[in-house]
Structures are given as structure tokens and as C-alpha cells.
Length: 269
Image (cartoon, rainbow, N blue to C red; front, side, top):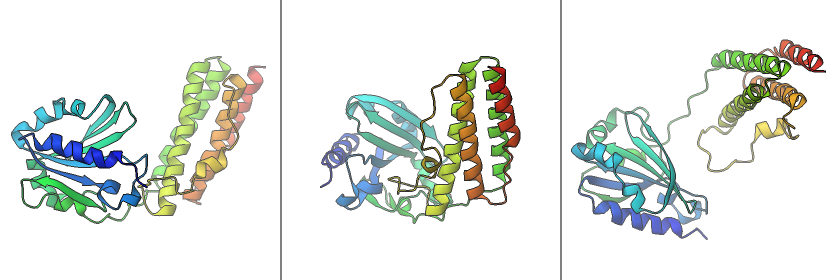
């Protein structure tokens, strides 16, 4: 049985934005635009909002988000198509708004690929054709250019070498910062691998494929000098394994990093 808050959210946001003369159209996309059985307690609500050109910047800066509930935090981004506002409220509910000016929407036929969404439902519209373009089929996922792995690997290994040196100099703060960033790099490769194996970069759930978890089951730490050096080695093993799964032609070049870590380990004893 789907959570009822999403249905009420659709009603509340529609009522709120319908009263604003600057809003030309509102649509819901994603899971909340389709069958109820696609919704669960963690489903966010995704909206597309079309705003008149003269009022666009003012709408973006307006306080209408506060009229929805007790706003906790939000993230904003912008591209040539939309301004995106992702908002979390204190009750844990999330609303995503793709906000376009009428001038942006007039160029939607030029977008390549079109906005990605399998389901769309118009909540209200004062302009013909809205929100037709947002219902475009999901385009094929672009393959990750394997030549970029070389650059990623070089940055990863550089962080490892520097982190080991920082441990040797007892700068554990910077060493830990670098070591944690190495785990983040492993997550990037694991996400690329999952996207390729599932054929999509849109995942509502983990889909049971967590390639990084397979490689890093054991707890890392404590975050003392020895623990950070162990973390460097463990992340290096995971990184090289993931890179090889993405491209079997990639060579394992971890030996100099392993040797550098062991030099640092001997130095601190």
C-alpha cells in the first residue's frame, strides 16, 4: 500500500502554484506520475514547473518553498534546460522541482537528449503542448569513455602516495582526508560498473548489485597511523579490481604504492 503523503503533496503543491499568476504549468513526473505501486515511503515527488519569463528569476528567489512545509535544506543547480531545486523538509519528505522559463521551454525541441522520464502527468497547464516533451523515451545510456580511466587512476595513485607520506610525517588529518577520498574514487568506479552492467544510470534501489561492498566487506579503522595505511592498501586493492572489471586492458600498477605504504609503516615504528 503506497504512502499517502505523496498524494496529498500533489494536491498541496498544485493548489499552491495554481494561485501564482507567473506559473504557466505544472506536471508531476517519475514514480508519482505512474501507478501507485511504484511509490514507497522513500519516494520523492518530482515536479516540472513552467514560469513566465519576466517572473522567472523572482520565482526562483521566492519563498514559495516555505509554504509547502518546514524546509530543512535544499540543493540548487542550473543548466540550459532547467533550474533544479531539490528540497528536504523537516519531516524527511523530499520534493524535486525542475523549473523552466517559457523561453527555455520554447527551445525544448532542440534538446538532445530530451528530458528523461518514463511517466508524466499534467497537473495544470495554461500553454498548449505542456508538458509533452518531458515524456520523451529514455535515451540510451552513453558508455563511459574508458580512456578516462587512465586519468582517474593517476589521480587515485597520487592521493595514495601523498597520504602515505603524510602518515610518515604524522599529519594524520590530511592523510585521512586523502584516504577517504580514495574510497570515494572507488565508489565512482563501482557506480560506473553498476550502470554498465544494468544498462542504466537511474536506480530507484540498489538492485542487489553493490560491487564495492563485495570488495570492502571488512571494517576499516581505527583511524590511527596504521589504520590509515591499511585503508590506503584496501582502497587500492578495490580500485584496481574495479578498474579491471571496467576494462580488462587496464594494468595493475599498485606495486609502487604498496611499497610506499610499507616504507611509511616502517618509518613510524
